[in-house]
Image 1: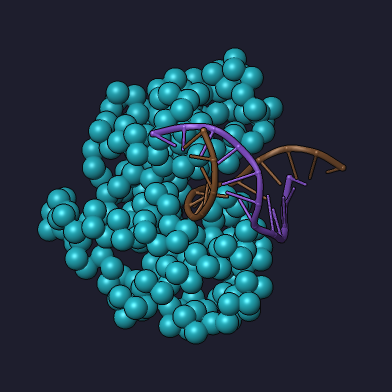
Image 2: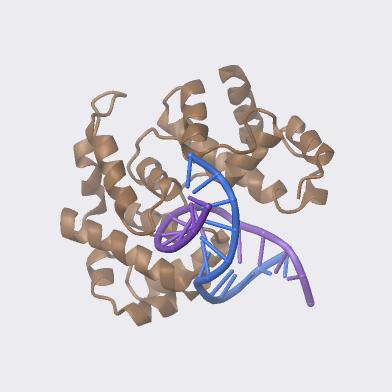
Length: 231
DNA sequence: TGCCAGGCCGGGT
DNA sequence: ACCCGGCATGGC
């Protein structure tokens, strides 16, 4: 299975090239993006991030003092913008009130000496999951892409694609699918980083528009796609 | 035109 | 443990 997963990864990487994820200049921008991108196309998130940058609000302390209604206006392009505003505010509050507004400080306690991270990691993950609007994908994205923690990020594309490849059940929980990857892949930050980025690249290409699925780098995926008349 | 994006919450069974 | 409606913009 490990060979198969790495083979798929190699095909994707060769086809799409390195994705250079996460597309953010700072860990804080990354975290903000992770919240804003929930169930919305990234191009919409970019608009909101630009709005925040223009207002100098990609700063925990500045955002902390920002008026809610004005923030909602800036986040409108991200669809469910009122909920997104609250989610961002609550994540930001967590950082400001617990880590002096220094996002990187969150990870100080989970820093590992070699490839082993200590028991503080699940503690931090649980704390993040308790924050309003922080679900497993958002939290794991933050841990991997902002914190450099080797944890595999699962999303809707992962579920669809690996089901179509015949490797996982159609109905599978986030936790189980994550375990599937982490059980069969080496715990390597760079691999987890790039693999998820590649899955999204493939998902963006084939998961919405079946007729365009012509030169899918994972051939089995394409054939399965057509046979099942998915979507 | 209509369809649907890189989820998550809360209330139901 | 699942299931499902609600959230509510903008691009193709």
